[in-house]
Image (cartoon, rainbow, N blue to C red; front, side):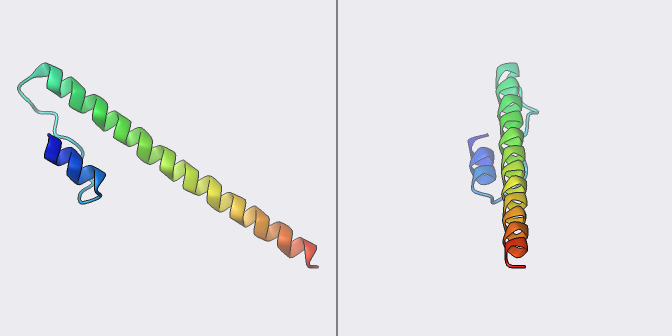
Length: 67
């Protein structure tokens, strides 16, 4: 499980942690880690979208000012 998380965090793979484990507590932990990873990725996608929208708005304002 540690190696799977390391590979995911380093961008080596997009595969999340396998949760088909024998220990129910470890399965629950792996599930929570996978959900947290998903939220982090979604937050980064949202941040980039907002950043691009801001840049486009600034470019539009700059273009209007130069007219």
